[in-house]
Length: 147
Image (tube, rainbow, N blue to C red; front, side):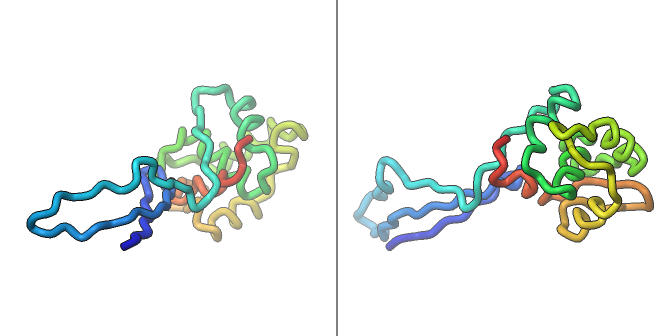
C-alpha cells in the first residue's frame, strides 16, 4: 500500500512524500520503506533567514523580487526577529522602510496599502491600531524566493 504523507514543521515548512507500507502480521517483522525515501517539498523551500545581518543587508538579501506587501512582511519580520507575538509600531515600520527606498533595497516609498494587503493575505495582524505582529503563515512570502 502506498501512503501519501504531508508534514508541517514548527516553522510552517511543508514536506510531502510517499512511502510503501506493508501490513504487519503477528509473525512478520516490520518492513522498512525503500532505503532512499522520495522526499519532495510541496512548495519551494523557504530560505533560512539570518536576523543577525544588518538591516540593509537583510533586506537586500531577501526582498529581491518581492511585491510591496511581501516586502512589508519581511521588514516586520526583521524588526520582530521572526517572533510571532512581537508588536511593532506602524510608524517604526514606515521609518525603517523610508530609509531603504533605493532600487537595490525596497525600491518603493512606503504605502499603507502594503500593510492592509499583507493583513488581508493573513501574513500579519493588528492587535491594536497602529501595531503589527506576524501571523504563523508569514513565511509564505518567501516561498520560491531564494534571494
